[in-house]
Amino acid sequence: MKTKKIWANFSVQDLNRTTQFYKQLGFKQNGESDQLTSFFFGDDNFIIHFFLKDVLEPGMKGQIIDTKAGNEIIFTLAADSKEAVDDWEKEVQQAGGTIVSRPEEFGKGYYGFVFADPDGHRFNVFHM
Image 1 (cartoon, one colour):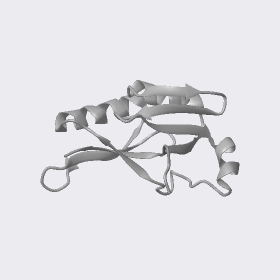
Image 2: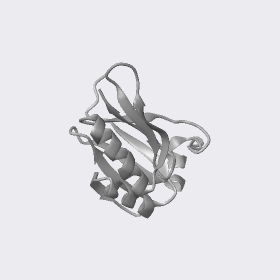
Image 3: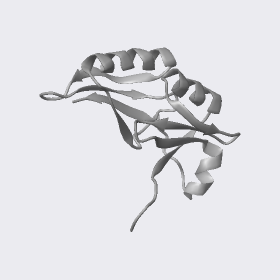
């Protein structure tokens, strides 16, 4: 099977809050409507759409996980250096994100932390 493109769809409660959070972190917006806000991630322009939960859930044909109570998926954002990881932690806090784990070493040559956006979607910021 061959696919042309892959992207992610997340549910959120507040489009404006989500838009402001990712803009403050410096992500380039892909578009927005009254149902979603969308951003590019990384050099390959991976797209994550953030849909209002009431819009996305019917299309999922089932309940969407409560991200405050459990984990759904974690995306890893590559950082250029340990200092960049530390800077990301500060920027995430200033933008209103939650630091799940502080920056730390993960074995030889690995350094990073985990954060959650305002809706509980988790990301690693990682340098190796």
